[in-house]
Length: 257
Ligand SMILES: Nc1ncnc2c1ncn2[C@@H]1O[C@H](COP(=O)(O)OP(=O)(O)OP(=O)(O)O)[C@@H](O)[C@H]1O
Image (tube, rainbow, N blue to C red; front, side, top):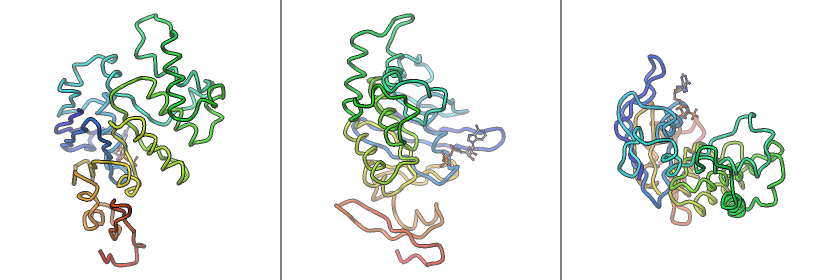
């Protein structure tokens, strides 16, 4: 279980997180939602320790994150963020092998078990055929699969993903999130698309201006009045396949929800 309690953080004098608390339970996908600049990425970075809160705390499986070493953190958390160009010369196989590094001891070389884990991870995301290709030459959707494979190769308890559907077409958006559900049922995912969040997440946390304004099931969080007050756009709620979905109103129309 990942527990964040009362996280505060500022960049300079601008407060970004103002007392954010959340719980990511094992076996569930938690969606982190909120408008641009509401603090989602900052909060996610605190969950995996790449940023420390100015006050508040994060614990993993009951132990304070701040007291855990990087190796221990990487056994529990695997992070999927967009890659920079610095990795551009790597092949897909090499990229996924990077996921094994936290599991190696100092100066230990990769061995048969690591190669097996890389093959198994690529197979799970349906990307074995890409193994010899250069990462930089892949499409956005293929890259996302490879990044998820790298996180899987790490064999961590939780996947943490920051906007994994960014730049993907609608089919790949669904594929990547279905993949997350298929391969790891313990995940925290930052999403912009509220309907994707409703479909693929078990629990949602909605941030606004650095504060949690709602948390709970998609049905509880995606209430039209709340969405309108946070995002400034009217919405009507409907149900598809027993799940909540929103229809948004063009800005000149009044909400009928
Ligand atoms: N390195 C930084 N230095 C200064 N301010 C920053 C930095 N990173 C983020 N911020 C600011 O912190 C606030 C929250 O940013 P954050 O990236 O956490 O929001 P977000 O909800 O993930 O946004 P988005 O949906 O646009 O990606 C924003 O106002 C942003 O401008």
